Image (cartoon, rainbow, N blue to C red; front, side, top):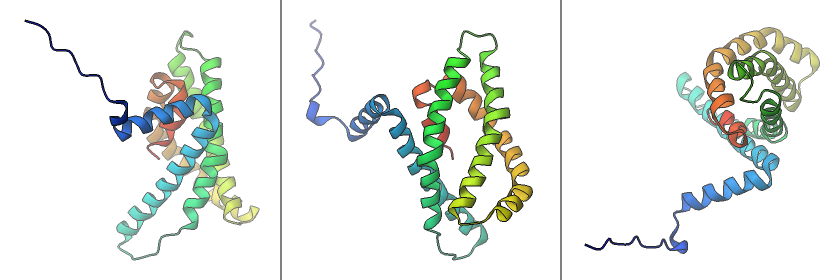
Length: 181
């Protein structure tokens, strides 16, 4: 009995999601920093809009959406999160390669104990500036919120970051670290 051959896929009939994914992966290869920066900007803005929506529902108020806040988060993602994450994960891969004993634990400790506190501080500083606030306001915000935000960051992100820094390919780590936000 002869075997039926599989039809050759029509290149014009490729699903849209396949084309988009292929294009995105090509951009990650050809323009990694710019691609991660724009991705981070979009994800940060969308995350802020989602957060505002959840907060409005939780408070049962018909408070208007702050449309400037997503722009601030997009700017932070574009100029800070995307590029810094790209270079951090490249550095991490170079400085603590998988062949090093306890590489997974070392990567996680470096990320959680050194990078996360600094990155959170940077977030507070940049957001304070983008909101047009002064240093006194920044100091008050840091005193009131920094430690609790850092502890929450450690609780929520540590399992995810363990997976991200140890099992996700380096070229998509910055993107993956921004997805759940």
